[in-house]
Amino acid sequence: MYLVTFKFNNIPGSSEYKRREMLKQVEYQFYPTLIKRVERWPMKLSRQRNLPRLIAVPDLPASKHSKKSSARDVKINDGLHVHAIIAMPLTFRHPDGCKLKTLIREKQHHFIGDFTSISHIDVERIEDRPKYVTDYVFKTAKRNPTLLDDVLILANQ
Image 1: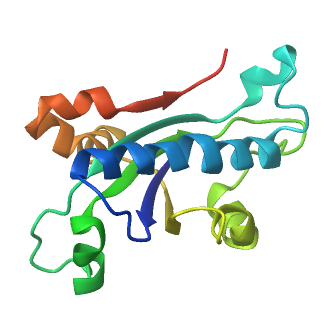
Image 2: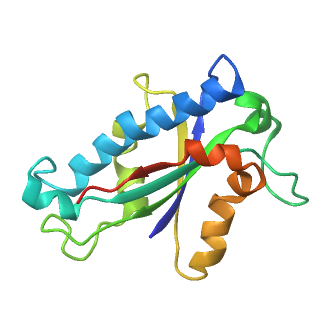
Image 3: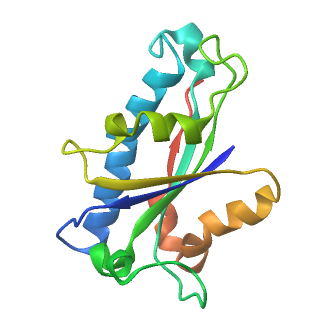
């Protein structure tokens, strides 16, 4: 399991439009690229159980005393970004489990470029406290329940 944070280049428009566009980039650009790197035959029905599971939620920065958010991060898209929890399966291609952090680092040019508004992907393995991480991912949606409509869940089976 991984906590993934997506930051984006400037997306003009309302906050609602920005949220939709960010989730579209995760769904239609990031996820298809990811599944091709994880499963050799991702469209085969019998292989779809091997695809990563992704839950993504838009998030606004919260004021933190010692966090490393720069003025640039807060200025672009009013600080709006997307958090995701991604579960990586064991597959024939990655029998020991695909290391998402390594995959994103080594294949960054497949995930970030002129073809997407995603500007940065931060990946951290969830080694303990999964409830805390889940609460963190959903914190903005918990404060504003209308954002629950913006939760993106990608899980084939």
